[in-house]
Length: 349
Ligand code: AMP
Ligand code: MG
Image (cartoon, rainbow, N blue to C red):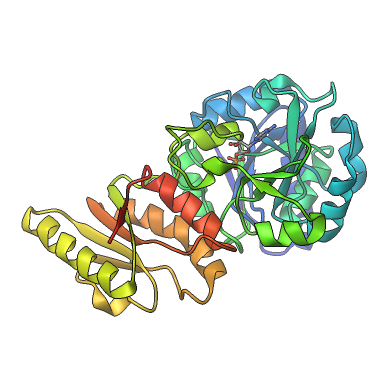
């Protein structure tokens, strides 16, 4: 398949291409597009064939449900059984934006899209290209991240092309992504709203709106002991090809311990790398030093994380160490992704 690549510089000038992309989705094809979180791989959410194609293009297990993207609040009612009052509250505050809500699905949503579940995940992305595309496609676009299953989610269109060229109909390039980490997922089908995946919208922000909010305990724990409630969270994700270890502890201890390990790895001929912060980047002796930003700006760290994980593959790093982060606020999302990337290998020093 020939994958059409289109650069969107100014939405007004590219309306025709967006219409064309919407038509592809209506006819059951696949289009990758930018959102504010990461690039999405879009298919028509109410067409089971489209969902099959998404799973095939990503190599994703088909019990891992897709998020349905909408562009207007009014469109929600058609695909869900009921809209709980919490949803309206959260939508007023966070939509369009990086928050996915889980509802009981209506009959129009095929099980192929929900991975066989009676519930459906819905989000309204905060990106002009995404919103225009969803509108052009008729309102309902199922879209997981536009990467091969298991690889870091793409924050640049070149990474989408790397994984998806030849497998999908079109890629819309909207430049670098602003947030760089997937949406927060909150389940509204139980008694108390529950965070199933941490993201840019933090637990503290949700609590401010809803009062009581629970968090799925598997978010930061080793998943072999507990079954996560968001099916996709059980799979190893975001993993670089090299061997990644997280290191947690006081700054001096962490830098010293990592440097010792780096020396050992170098002595055995390995290519070494460190994922660190502005505060520590001058302290390491590795072949590749990847500074994710300042500890005072966790949004910047989240934005750079997936690009760094992909670069480590290009660098052919064999042994990688990453500093751990605090697990409150956005740090929870960063640690959730890093722990998955490391297969939960963390050293406390
Ligand atoms: P992605 O779109 O690649 O970020 O992945 C979407 C993730 O959302 C899945 O891996 C699931 O973990 C989660 N998800 C989607 N739909 C549901 C649902 N109905 N119930 C629980 N989790 C869901
Ligand atoms: Mg994904």
